[in-house]
Length: 232
Image (cartoon, rainbow, N blue to C red; front, side, top):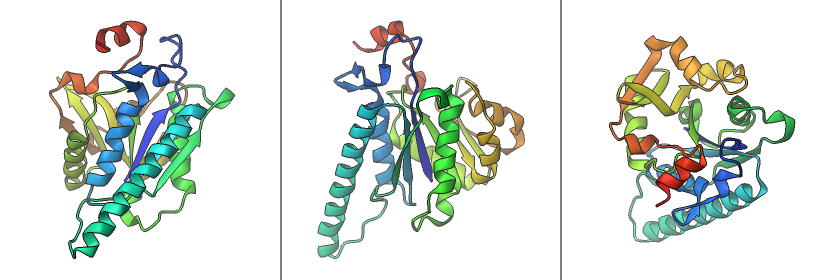
């Protein structure tokens, strides 16, 4: 499973770099990233984290966090192995890629989606097998996503045998969403601010919908007003 974290937006409506703005004690983007690292460790199949960003500081923090997580997980596995225990559901997040999307290339969310998909195609699958045949996209301004809910979604999606997965709330499709590898060509054709919802709507018979009736899970921080309302 490729977990593609979109953290390259210019936040024009916010007025400054919202992803690095402190939100409940740490940069906004770190909330979602922390949950994806947890998800990597919880999954019973290999997961690779791909971060698409335009910012040096986000790249630096991502490398620091992902390397520390990899080391801590490996130390834990080594410790348990010495005790002759078997570790289940513990992915060492050694497989991560950081992709830059900046300058004129960064002309909307579609450009970050394309960058993430190209990174998937261009990078070898390190013992991932079929598990790297799916691409799940996350937006870095959604601070309340939870790994446990995402894990349930992933497991049910795989059992569904569908090619597209989408979460929903109150009957409305929401982000994150998920695509099998046969949709990569369509993802690469997206432009501007057009995201994956266009593809979802084009293939309704191949969509698995997972309802999450928790509106707070889907909150995103787009404006200063959103930030002021949530950062209390």
